[in-house]
Every structure is written in structure tokens, then in C-alpha cells.
Image (cartoon, rainbow, N blue to C red):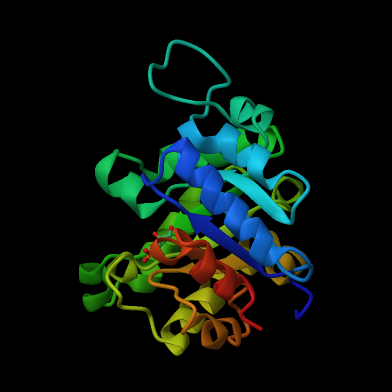
Length: 252
Ligand code: 13P
């Protein structure tokens, strides 16, 4: 405990052309040069990966993808594989984001295959979990997370998981301006860490980074990061602007 290096990640979703993305990436690099106590990642659209990869070269900012397919190659129109993402410079891959589960039919089973595919090529999976508003109101939060975490990691063994990152994003807090309170987030993060402990042991549960996502802003990041089981953030809206994202990166 206490040894986990924070990760502040920006999910740019379906925003920005390659030129706009590269420009924001350049502005971000200017503002975070010299930051060396936090890992920083941005995930632009697939179309912008190459341009952003060039813009962040030699900087502390790393590249991530927003999704991937589990086969390396084949007749899968519209998909992109983990080795392809590696080849354009991705270090991370966001997997199972709630928007993908909601609009594109992702299930715990497809998420599991994608996590395996990412790990196989050394792409760090940012495995997203989170309950909907109805599930929270029905007091299903912990049981939903239990299922998502266990099924998402089914069949994986301890020595494959050292590069795994989990992101807890309550669906009701995404893009709504409603953040989970620090205590609500901490309760769930602690629960997720206990699931990792139960399934994979102490060492992994102590070292795994669990990010919080859902309306993270410059004004609420410090309080979230002061919680013992919150190790970083997955930021949507506030990551699209270099100035606000750099303030989140420099929350200390
Ligand atoms: P917002 O920060 O816009 O709420 O989005 C969170 C998110 O979905 C990041 O993956």
C-alpha cells in the first residue's frame, strides 16, 4: 500500500480530428513536461492514434486505445487488433467501457477475451466496470461489480495480471456532472481490491491500480486521490482540453 504510482488517463471518446487531437496533445505535453510522479495517458480515436503518437514522442504522456478486438487479424470488418495498436505506439487499451457495453453489445465474455488479447501482446488493459443508476438504487452495486470483475478476469492467472489496471466508472456519473462522493467511490474501490485479493492474493491486490471515472474535474480530483484505494482517474470531458486535463494531472 502507498507504493502505487498514480495514473491519470484521458478518454477522448469520439471527439477531435487527427489534427485537433495532435494539437491538444502538443498543448498537453507543454504543460506536463517535468511531471515525473504520475503516469499520464491519452486515448484518442483510432484515426488520431498515429498523429498523437508523434506529438507525444519523448514526453511523459503515453498513448492508449479506446477499444480493441481479440483476434490478431482476420475478416472482421471495422475492427482493430491489439498487435496493430501496439504497432502505432499504444501502451494501454481501454476495455469494456460502459458506452461500449451499452451501445455496442460488449458483454463480460467479450471483455474477458479482449483483456486476454491485450495482455498477450503487452498492451496494458484498462478494464472498466461500473453499475447503472438503477442497479445502485436497487442496492445491486457490489453484486454487479463482483460479477463484472470475476467474469472479466475469468481464466486469467496471477502472472498475467501485473499490467492490469481497473477503472471503476459508475455509469450514472459519466458525463452527467454527478460524481460519486469520495466515500462512495472509496467503498467500491476497496471492495474491488478485496475481490482481487480473494481471487489472486495479497501481492496483486496491493499493487493493482484502480482508477475512478465519472465527471472527474480539476476541482474534485484532489479529494478523490486522497482516498486510500483510489489510484488515479479515467477522465472524459475534462480531458479534452489540455489546460483542464493538465490541472487534473498536477492535482497534488
Ligand atoms: P466524464 O469524465 O465525461 O464523465 O467521462 C468519464 C468516462 O467515461 C471516462 O472513460
